[in-house]
Amino acid sequence: MLGSAPRSGDCPGDPQGAAGPRREREQWYRRRHLQRELHDGAALRISALTLRLGLLRHRALPELPADADGPAVQDSIGELQDELHAVLEELRDVAAKIYPPLLDEAGLGPALRGVADQLQLPVAVVASGERFGPAAEGAAYFAVADLLASLPGARAVPGAQAVELGVRREGDQLVLSVSGIDACRAELHAELIDDRARPLGGTVDVANVVGGVRSDASTITARFPCE
Amino acid sequence: MRVALAEDGALFREGLLMLLKAAGHEVVGAVPDGDQLVALLSIRPADIAILDIRMPPEPDGGLVTAQRLRAAHPDMGLLFLSHYAESHYLMRILEIGTDRIGYRLKEKVGSVDVLTDTLTRIDNGEIVIEPVLAKRLVDRPRGDNKDAVAALSDRELDVLRLMAEGRSNNGIAGQLYVTPKAIEKHIANIFAKLGLHTDTAAHHRRVLAVLTYLRSQRTGA
Image 1 (cartoon, helix red, strand yellow):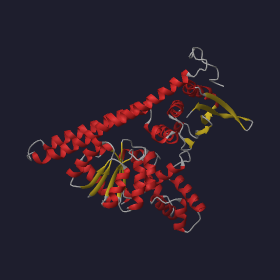
Image 2: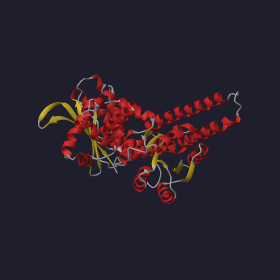
Image 3: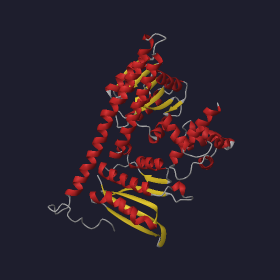
Image 4: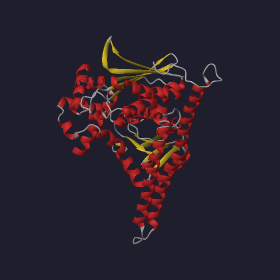
């Protein structure tokens, strides 16, 4: 069992040890809020700018004489619009690192499928549409993202076993299971998940016994306190 | 073209309104949420409704609103605009319909030509997907998609065509006078022949299959 021992030096003045997880929860709320601010503020303004540039481009046309720099001006405006698209793409990348918008809007199932798609890994996701609050969802999401990014490129390994991700609720806990993990590397992977689960007061287990038989594939089960 | 517009961001709504007018379209109304769009379109006809995905009445109010509009006005085109090109949203959009429908990034419709081209294609019955997203999805299964579609049997092609019309397994079974179980078997064969492996979620593969088919239709036409 990883993460079951109390962290030394963690909130010494708090006998319940609840201040650490509370602060950690607040961090996730703050991250989600920042991501929403990026979308509702800067991103929307830039999108609206591309429309105004489009209008400018359209209006500039008839006023220019045929032999003037009409097409050059048009092209320049088009280039500015492309540039704004690139700026928005960078903002999207930053937003995804702070708190993925798809996670915020659609939950863990769609967000985790998105990560697997981007990495082109064979990953099966079993998740209901249930929501668990921004802290547990954020921690579970980034735990899986870290883990998947650390896997050897599955396409480079013929017949690589598919990783199966499960998300379910048990009482006030979000239970994340990751199966099909190479047993030799399971402890390493479990640590990655533990780094995200422990600050919230969660726990991580590793098992490589299926139906009483030792297997070369492990299952990592992480529990995150949730809403 | 007669266009109705629903978007909760005032800046973007006003910008789009002006661009639509500059492009020579008749804007029958521009409102800040889905409920007002439904009310507007119940009294004023339009050829196409443009909807922000993320707007009231719900976090993804554009999708909920579009479902109501498709039921009330089956011939009206739907264009979704979003800040994100996500396959998750594309799937939900294809569940609403696979014709007269479009999904584009907000900053990519900022020219009279692109806007009019997008609206015209939707009005012609086409499905218009943000190129970057369509490419991401269709490119994923390696190999020549056109050859893959050509490898399908006639019956499998019938099934895929009905899938592309957005029908469920039971609906397809009803159309072809076979059992849903037989349809499941055909669909498994289609997925295998198109190189859509079992590691992808089932509904995701369904969308990929439909996209592959639509793409092969376009290049073959």
